[in-house]
Image (tube, rainbow, N blue to C red; front, side):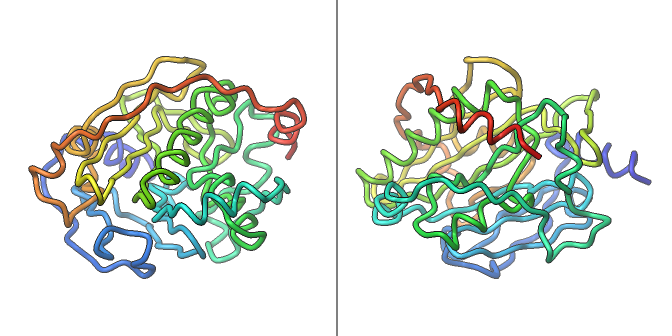
Length: 267
């Protein structure tokens, strides 16, 4: 049964259809309050929406990761987050069944970072920061990728939100191809994406990167990303709006402090 569901995930982008529009349980995090639409209904097996203070996720009990995180990232939250020191509090998500959730033991000695989708650096207070350390908001991420190029992408998005006032941000894993692997019981994504929509400019774009020790990434329109991953991330936007490409700054490599790196490696 697991292999059948896994095959559905891998083929999601190639199959037509839609799981249908739905209102979000935490609408403030989504454009017009609408959840992304999973085009292949089989990708929606064992999913559960989880709402947090400044972000929401759609969790998959099959991959034991989120399929996406969603943020309405505001400039004042970015400013408040800049005043917060980092306090690691990685933890299993208590609202999920044990048979469907990631545990700290899944990541221990795996060689992968517990990579945030909605990043700790966006969290404006201690409560939000702790929520961001739920394993429901994590994916197994290549360590060099997470600490350098991905950190650079997160930094750029914060700068963009601070400049523009607010952005809608959707971040998630992609499971593409036929050679998928697991750490413990958690499926390792082949790629990661971060999509942004600027309501002031009425344009968006996305970074798409292999989950590997690489500095190379792609930028693409929202429409191109949706076709690649098999999810209609922003269903309230028109086809023309999804093709409107937002200028995305070049990503500079960021090196995190040694202390931060050591903390990421701890179980």
